[in-house]
Length: 163
Image 1 (cartoon, one colour):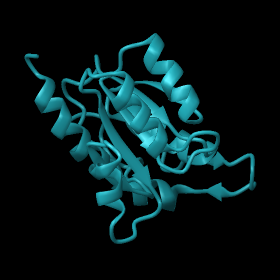
Image 2 (cartoon, one colour; image 1 turned 180 degrees about the horizontal axis):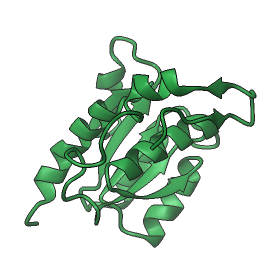
Image 3 (cartoon, helix red, strand yellow; image 1 turned 60 degrees about the vertical axis):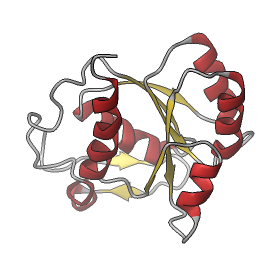
């Protein structure tokens, strides 16, 4: 990977250069080490913001995951109905159906123990409790850093080995 990566958010025209990629851990890191043993894992990334979606997708691919995308909670429900996922990374503030309601629907309709991890920019006191109360298994804040993402996903990777 080069020293920088240029991403353009179509909504705002906002440019992000190498300093941001270094901040979240995408530049200057070797591909090995952090990603071992996860290439078969399938994640549904529920993210409506184009820039956040692109950055998170790059991180997940760096970690060796296969990723499908949903832009809102309704697409999440449809995707889960059509395909079996190991983990859902769920933005809580999506249009049409937010991550909280999508999670409540998943827990009501599917009893398969699907792991749901909230991704939120709202890192206020109590947000983790709110996410867990809605039925999510964990919560990480934005901007998501590669090490934090690998750590939280690793917790659930270990739980599924041999199952």
